[in-house]
Image 1: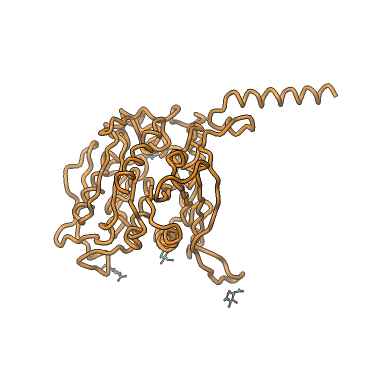
Image 2: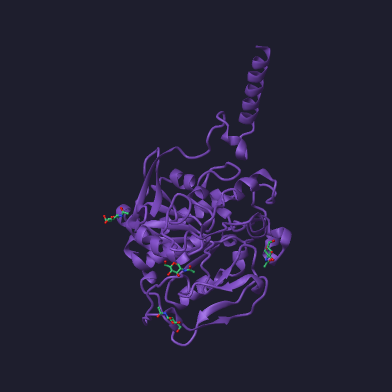
Length: 385
Ligand SMILES: *[C@@H]1O[C@H](CO)[C@@H](O)[C@H](O)[C@H]1NC(C)=O
Ligand SMILES: *[C@@H]1O[C@H](CO)[C@@H](O)[C@H](O)[C@H]1NC(C)=O
Ligand SMILES: *[C@@H]1O[C@H](CO)[C@@H](O)[C@H](O)[C@H]1NC(C)=O
Ligand SMILES: *[C@@H]1O[C@H](CO)[C@@H](O)[C@H](O)[C@H]1NC(C)=O
């Protein structure tokens, strides 16, 4: 009797303590209130198909979609759809690792109908992978620290020294870092399969919900770019936070130099075919070369040479990229903008520092000033509606 009463007392004290300190993982305690905007949530699977297997027919390539509706009602004319980056899933748009209001909630507060997807092959999505689901890592703690949460410690590029916005230390064993690192999960190693399933299911989603603003992060920018090619009339605007689909090359996490640079995306900004003019049937017909000085502060870029081909479908969609002042992307994002301009796309580039928003790394939408970044995106949507 005594010991059981003592046990209850201990549990009560720990619940009360947790409620008093609703930071990061502690906020999971029942006594902690949510910081998210009030909304209702519905979920759907869109697209996909049956594939006959030995055990029976399986469904593949369906897109997991959450529909969030603000409790105060929808006030904006067009929805937004959030596309996560590589290694993460749709959860990245919900409450932040330090349990502040997530990016989706800022848009619920602005009165948008918000959709969040898990890309095909990721999280609750699915993709047919004929190679028996060869998965690759989402991110290691080392890549995350050096590339995303504490680049200032490695100092691989001068702008890293301006990084101030990550909540917490940004390194392992800090509870906020650990909560963030835990959101990385494996994904398919076959980006061709993923792109093809995202093109099909993504345009089906837009045909169901109508013309929408697509907001993506990092390599998640691949998908709105492909949807702009395939169903441009359904894309009201393509908003890329730190686009990762750098033309013809890839930088892994912490890599900003030629050491970590690999050739990638044979169609320029995608692995699968997009429409060029003059037309081509094989990506090998694109001719390009590395242009510009290559320093740790500003990287050289691949640009087309010879016949300069345009991207006529993609050019129909309004495009903007946003880049943080202390992110590795500030050293190479100009490559995306210059390539798009050359290909006839009137791409806009918002360097956040030009809006007096400074100190952001690659995951600005999770960092301390995320509300300000949401404000910049909202203003761009209002100006382009
Ligand atoms: C899968 O579906 C097809 C078409 O309905 C059917 O012919 C086939 O027998 C199914 N496969 C199995 C293993 O049940
Ligand atoms: C990716 O999947 C496609 C389609 O199934 C296949 O043709 C291709 O060989 C795969 N690529 C790799 C690198 O596994
Ligand atoms: C990135 O970090 C990994 C893991 O610490 C390291 O092995 C690799 O050399 C780093 N790459 C660059 C380009 O700094
Ligand atoms: C594209 O061109 C390359 C290089 O010429 C060739 O190896 C490849 O087979 C071609 N692909 C297709 C689908 O024709």
